[in-house]
Amino acid sequence: MTQYAFFFNQKRCLGCKTCVIACKEWNESKRGDANLNRALTEETAGTFDTPASWGAGARPDTLNGAHSKDILRRFDAKEDWRRVTFFEFGTKAPNIAIVPLSIGCNHCSEPACIPVCPVKAISKEDKYGAVRVDSSKCISCGACRAACPWDAPQYYKDLQAEGPRPPMTKCDLCYDRLEKGLKPACVASCPGRALELLPVEEILKLHPNATRTALGFKQEDVNRTKPNIYFESRELFF
Image (cartoon, rainbow, N blue to C red):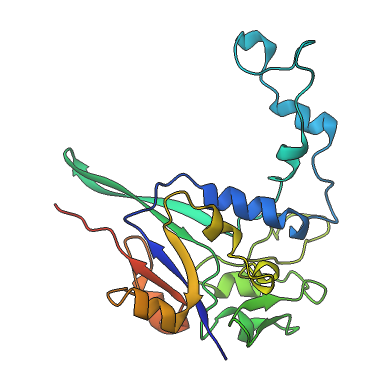
């Protein structure tokens, strides 16, 4: 099996969340609530228009017409397959730092989610080493979410809420893009070139000093699931 892994350069990350939006845009049709809630309509997307009372901005008017809602619909994925989290260090200036961490599913070598799934809806494929879910089998029990230390399994609605439960969804390594020779949406979109996805051997060759943890990444769980993500970590100089 060939194992692909992410490489995240924490020093280059701008914290802009472009990777998050790109992921949502590409995977909007795969969101777990797709069959439960309609995507944004012309009416519901209208709530995002700039209010005319603001007196500025590209608000709809007779000259320019109404806003196009198509771009908004493409960001309507409810689940956050990729997340950027910010961690604060220090208590008094100038010894203060706010450090971003961008992660999705780490496609672990020993995934905690697979053995706890009662219907065997989650599996690890051989071509890229991606951990994938068959949503048609998922019963939304939440066992995988409870087991995963990286918050990779995503559910749109609280599992305690009434009504139908959407199936679990998660980062699938942009498998469809890889099959076409493309980079994952998050990697391709990063303006700081802070993200890479390559076979583990290539990452270690290109980044011989790569670490298995970074500021904000939970080191205590690395040995348990062996996540396939490598880092160039930010350093604190105080």
